[in-house]
Amino acid sequence: MDNKILKQKGEIMIDRAERQFWAYDVDVRDSKKDVVLLDNVQFIYELSLAELELKALGADFNVTNGLREFKILNKSEELKESIKKKASYFRTVNGEYTDYFHLIQKNQTRSVNQYLTHWIYPYKGKFHPQMIRALLNIIGLKEGDTVFEPFSGSGTTALEAQLLGINFIGIDISPLCVMQGRVKTESIYVLDEILKIKDEVIPKLVNNLFSTETNYYEMIERLSSNERVRNFYKMARLLAVSDNSRRKRDFKSSFIKNLHLMITSLKDFIEIQKRLTLKLGGVKTEIGDSRDIKLPDNSIDGIITSPPYSIALDYVQNDIHSLKDLGYDVIKMRNDFIGVRGNGRSRVELYNEDMKKSYFEMHRILKPNKYSVIVIGNATYQGKEVKTVELTIEYMESLGFRLVNNINKIIFGLYNVMKKENILIFKKEK
Image (tube, rainbow, N blue to C red; front, side, top):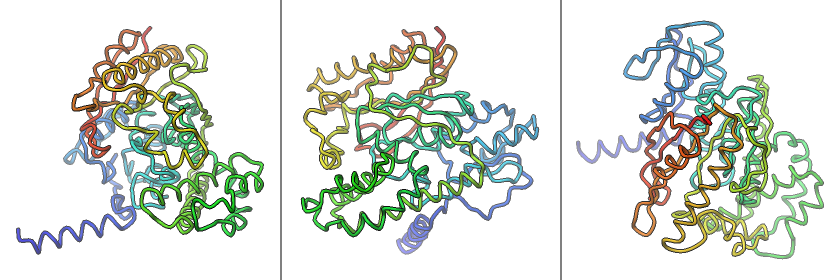
């Protein structure tokens, strides 16, 4: 194939990628088909999760049409509605679009997985929200149940649980992560107050990021007594701080652009919640330590988490610009983070001991016969592979968990510290 044809094909692909939601063709009609996958489902692990999701929702099925469609063998109106309302990997059920298909149309970015408020703040190593929604279904969590996450990170599980009507409790050692989770799930409840002070905030911005002429955070404290409103405007600033530090973008123009996108995303969230009549789950995200979880024994219906890859990826250094802007002592903070302490072999040993404490706590708070999902990979540290997956399986089973599924998930990026992750699904048996 000559270079001219290759270039033309490449330009077509780029053009498609830059058109919003090209992966989700809203003109396709599937009226004669039982269940059809979304167009962007392309990896084996996604098909595995899609099948597990259907089984968890009560479907018996055959896979047809080159693994793109599913013929349901035990059809019922109740099953159809369950798949339509809950499922994550499917475009249509009996020709009707799923709720998830409608949700992902509400997207202010060019990334198909950053719909609603998922996109807010560029956190490294984010969960894939579609995967999390599927896992919530696979481990049998229903409206009113409570899922816990000991490393709540950017808030992906919090938002997906909220959308399914599942209550969420999450902790993270990082105050920046806690703020992210809160902003993404709580801001919709204070949109009117956010809009009320918008025209006061923008004129008081200064072009110089480091100017002390206007103390932004003091200004936000004066303008609103509502913590949710203050968190929203703090995160808007941190987006501009991140853009300025990482991409050298003008601070003020970045702030204004991101503020408007954040507000539009909240409006999208509220509109789709009303249109789909979603009963949102309650969300509680706090600063906390996974090694000492402040919850009673046998009190949680499910756990979904991904432990920090901090022996290979320094989360403190990665967000140092935002943490410093918020006024935190990052040197002191490092001592609290799992996987950041120590050097060489001692760093790996400290990480493993901290993770064992975290797994022990997860076992303690989970109800019997319920599930804990851990998404984890073997990282490379100082040129050697750290067998984190094997350690996790061995220690979890010693606690009384049984490994019921181990799904390989190929990943890209993340500073090349790993090539794949494993989705480990454990059941607490004793």
